[in-house]
Image 1 (cartoon, rainbow, N blue to C red):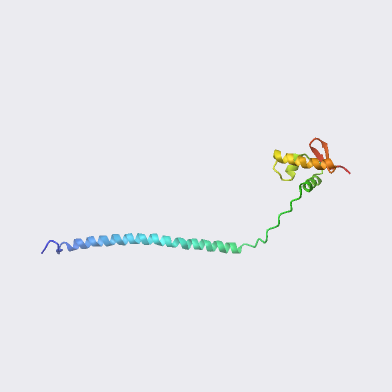
Image 2: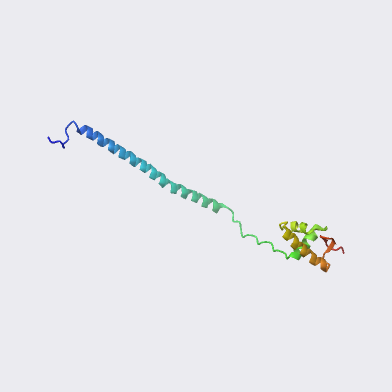
Length: 137
């Protein structure tokens, strides 16, 4: 016999070594299959979530068309509406609050100017500096 040929005593050892290699390969492949199975399951779960979301949204009642925004009154009509609703003298700061304007110096100044114009025409009365009211009939 030559040195390269297996002998009867080395065959079982080689078979055992080959069996370990095959077992290790099988374990590696099982792990890969488990990882691929998990990756394959993920799109299925995502698709199910989308299906449930779509079903939920389709089950919601139709909200109908949005309501048109309330027409914005011109400044003077808005001012007169606030005075009519208030029924008492107001300052520019109170007008800003009533008209849902930010109480800021620029807004107060602009409202004061808008109050002085009708006061100059007799539509409003400035009973004391900065205090405006509707004239009494």
